[in-house]
Image 1: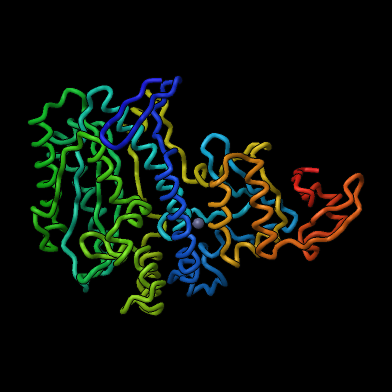
Image 2 (image 1 turned 180 degrees about the vertical axis):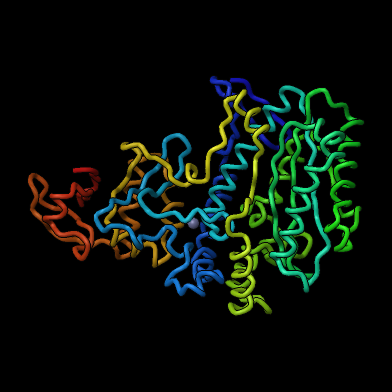
Length: 441
Ligand SMILES: [Zn+2]
């Protein structure tokens, strides 16, 4: 294994040649766990807010409110609580995951984390073969009279038109082979502010001077788009930066990775970005913290507009050229669904829980605490024990004596959810009060 230490990010090459991001430090783990509590906290709020379409169609629940929940799931489904060996992550399988990268803080967080790792791998691979990268932010002038829908439309359409014109095709496109394009949306004193953050991967023969001209040219080209100009946008607001170390890359990622934003010091106290705006999840946090001017009514209106407008739009797009490049290094870009629907191995499963029990855990808001608890354990055995006592201490289990085979004293899940017959029939887990914990009878 070859290790490369690049500023504050340690990247190792596995024996199979795959660059991987080392995320197993205590600090990272702590941040992830703090993040989990936050994202689950605002997820309940996000679930309350419906889009315009959902309101008109009078749907009883938003997509987000179903996420992680058991509504619509057959009561015979088994929900598995697992602790993965490889990543040491606590995972829940068998529940519905909404996959709304814009609306759902939990799904967005999981997908963002995965994209971040994939992009680090692409970055390391690119650096290893001397490929240069540039980070450009495309923005348009906005104020309160512009709706989010109209601003996103101008931004996306102008970007598309720019890529189609002759000057771009002749003088700009030949200098890069792939890109990663992310849209960031904030809300501030001047209303909604969507902008595009694009990371360009240049052809390997490009020289530093050419890279600088590329950046300047592409900014002018975007600025010259009719709709961009009509808005009174300024050229100097199109910002470019050469990416040549991992800090630059981290800076790029922080623009769209919701977990990075939420963890920043500024965000923790004011819930605002460095520039003073609110991300949509920041609005939810401000509402939850009862910040003046951000009551549920105000936030509902804004978040609902945001949820309606972003439906079906790309949050992050990795171009075909960049994906092809990644394949040369065995870097595969997983789909959002693949990120969310993790397959767990049988020996990684700690408990299979009845739907009704999971539902109770969900509605009492205990999921983040439970998952964090699992990740604080050294191994599966310890995790099983801790989960059991957690459930017991929080009143989820009922102690009853049941005579089954050689075990004369068992603690069963609350009999509201689990009868002895079901227990025997359905192969559910049980716990021996003597301290031993047994799974999959
Ligand atoms: Zn979700």
